[in-house]
Length: 188
Image (cartoon, rainbow, N blue to C red; front, top):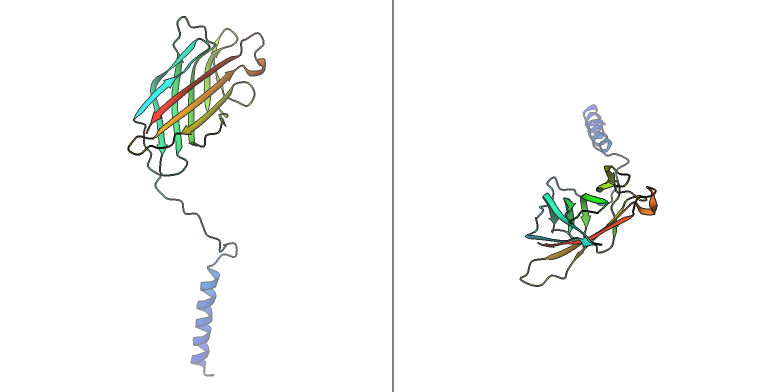
């Protein structure tokens, strides 16, 4: 072999080594999930109706409630941020108001425990109005989102059921345990 051919083979070998060195030994051949750079479009409901009358107490939406829904997936997914205040006269409720902040909760028609502060309660347990988060033991909160079968030519309908138990298991001695139960109906 002449020297020119040796150089050509060495150059070709160096290029091949360089190309194969660019592949990580940790890479797999498995298919990868592509994550889009832009989030899925969300829609807002056409109509929101609440029914929170329970044990002689009534709660109504206050402020600017946010309900955003991703309808491009199945089941549909919700982002919510709303606040409700007790409006009964006279007011005897321990839970005076509450706020729900939920991120990407699917409408799967089974109860979802709202913990880690997804619900915050303004309540009077010990004579002073204070803010309390939802947790797994003291202030329980459960949400269920169910979508009705869709009728042709009609808007989609969803019912959100919310159940709160404040002072569960008598965490605050001498204070009442109070339940808040209601529904929010949405037309999309």
